[in-house]
Image (cartoon, rainbow, N blue to C red; front, side):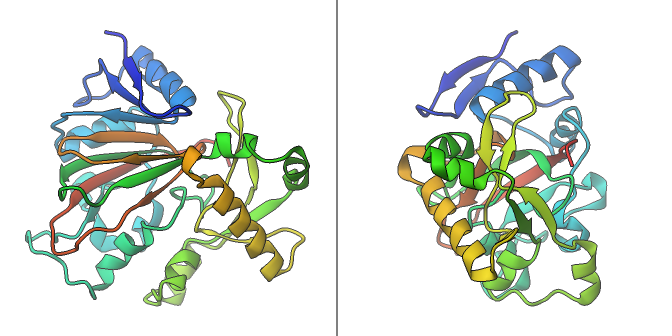
Length: 286
């Protein structure tokens, strides 16, 4: 059955139907899904019922698993489903996690605009997020189209950015939020990497900004000059016209292309339970 797509935003994002998501995809299904992601960048599947194993089987059919910060944040995953991360304020014993607990830092950091695993090479290709339990009218996730944002820049600004690279660090954004829990051997696992400020999508050919909270400097610029440029670009790229806000329902399964969009979680009352599971596909491009 071919995938059926209903656009949810003028520029990107579609609600998708027609796929069984509780298993690995065959080659033709995978190609159809990737074609849809090349176009819309974010796909929303409603009313899913996925076990952790089923989510990981589906994810592996799209490529190699990206472990991201799980090399450091060991408490956020399980050996049975390595690479599956809890985006949750509930612990394994089904208790709410205290606001001051170090495990909450991931939830706070998720509220910054970012591209998953931009702090390493290869970075993340796709992220897949499944909603198990969500609070009412809170904890939305926003996505910003970096392709449209780049195309919305003036020609002179586009020309200025050609050839520039940004330095991305796994710990830069978290340290800005006061997260100083990392030991030297943790920091050594993810030294900073450099990515072009403008990347061309290998399938669609569209250029997009590659920025976000992990970006901390720009080639050929002093630290303040580089960070001001990154701040200006982020301000532009997250204007209302480039952003889709997803209001979660239980059973939503959202897949997005980290090469084309930034995302961030929105705040919610942390005394309300919120449980989502994320798996991530590693990119082939370095």
